[in-house]
Amino acid sequence: AESHVDRSIEDPQIFIKTNIIGTQVLLDAAKKHGIKKFLQVSTDEVYGSLGKDGYFTEETPLQANSPYSASKAGADLMVRAYGETFGLSINITRCSNNYGPYQFPEKLIPLMISNALEDKELPVYGDGKNIRDWLHVYDHCTAIDLVLHKGKLGEVYNIGGHNEKENIEIVKLILKELGKSESLIKFVKDRLGHDRRYAIDSTKITEELGWKPKYTFETGIIETINWYLDNQDWMEKVKSGEYQEYYEKMYSKK
Figure 1 (cartoon, helix red, strand yellow):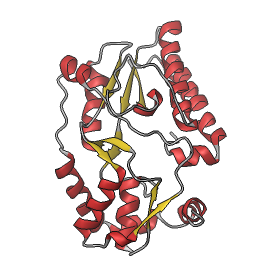
Figure 2 (tube, rainbow, N blue to C red):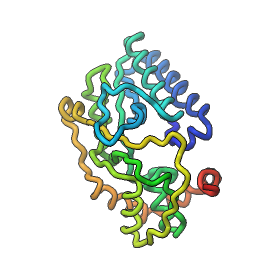
Figure 3 (cartoon, rainbow, N blue to C red):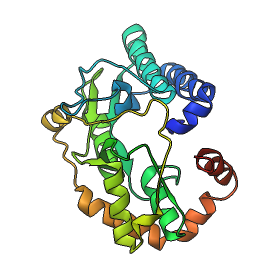
């Protein structure tokens, strides 16, 4: 899937081709070959933006605000349609922001770690007070596995980490753990259509399937920082070539 909001603002069409048409191609293949279940891994961003209070539930209306989230919402509806029309066995999961090892450096946490290690400016959108609910990738994977094997057919399950944090709070934490100065922080022009707050209610998957996250953010972020410290060769490889062009395009003039 195409998964980065910034890229969807630059080129919405590739998100339509990959996330909607690509999902439809996979659905046709699943229908043709009679797979036991098609599980669509989606995002809480399809619900739009929250105010200061409240949480996304599985009944929250879809209200996508970016080309990325619109493409995922369209894919979700296509999956549901194949379930209703063709009798395909389906589930949809919608997760909050993931973090952990091997995450591509365009994402917030690896981007901040990478730049801090190089003493480069850390670009922070707007006032940095946008709030996200953070979910360790391990906890996300265990939830997906549960839904795949035990989820009730046709159902949607929200998966959240119960770790609401302002972006700037995470940036400052990373700098502190790496022993770097907050003077590296550079506030840049806000992203177009930047949703203010996401927060997920995971009651359904907890009560129906018994899922609970293993990681608190406080333990998960330290483990994640240490992983990137121990795997800087990997980071350098994935940052070469196309990524450098993307980075310059996104941040050099902001």
